[in-house]
Amino acid sequence: MSVLEPFGTRLRRAMDERGPLCVGIDPHASLLAEWGLTDDVAGLERFSRTVVEAMADRVAVLKPQSAFFERFGSRGIAVLEKSVEEARAAGALVVMDAKRGDIGSTMAAYAETFLHKDSPLFSDALTVSPYLGYGSLSPAVALARESGTGLFVLALTSNPEGGEVQHAVRADGRTVGATMLAHLAAENEGEEPLGSFGAVVGATLGDLSSYDLDINGPLLAPGIGAQGATAADLPGVFGAAVRNVVPNVSRGVLRQGPDTGALRSAATRFAEEIAAAVAAV
Image (cartoon, rainbow, N blue to C red; front, top):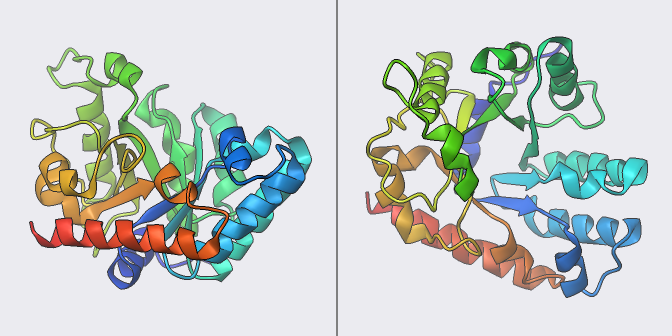
């Protein structure tokens, strides 16, 4: 397998050149309706193509939510394949938001679906769930290292239900979320300029100073915009690790469609607000 530069290296460069903004591609039914599109494959294709055309040549990361494509079956997956291909060709890094998590050969198959260079869905990184035990992710970690791709591991998520698992205290006195962060720090040890194994940490969670977010890897931060967090909140949530944060905005940008100019303007506004907040640290 030909190996790309490590994902962390490519992401750091993209963040430095384009800013750290990640825009989601979330074609759920309500957004299709807001855009005046039909809730079918034709609407899905129009939505996805418009977002890619508007964003892929200017933002660091695009993050398709796989579920919204999968619900249309094989034709929806075909749209996803094309969106990934076109986004990467235009220079954006693609983080596939599929939140896969399983064990053994099944986890390996999920990894191959999104991280093998010969897969039609080949992406730069994949979101994964570690809640069958961090070790269950080993096949995905191994393939990511082999292929130059990355992982974003659910650690401290923005959904209220997540706390019952992620804030649970283990026998060693450490929370489950902190344990996941420690595993990722170990994966990224010694990597420069940035490791390829990131965490998903919600921007809406407030003060996280009790957690060590310095994992030498990227922190994918959902919650900016429609979920209530702002760019100005980022330093307070992430502290010194804010320079490795990849803030994700979905509805806050996507609601400006289908006008391409309005989508670009919204992304530019968020990117400028984020850059100002990070520069102030």
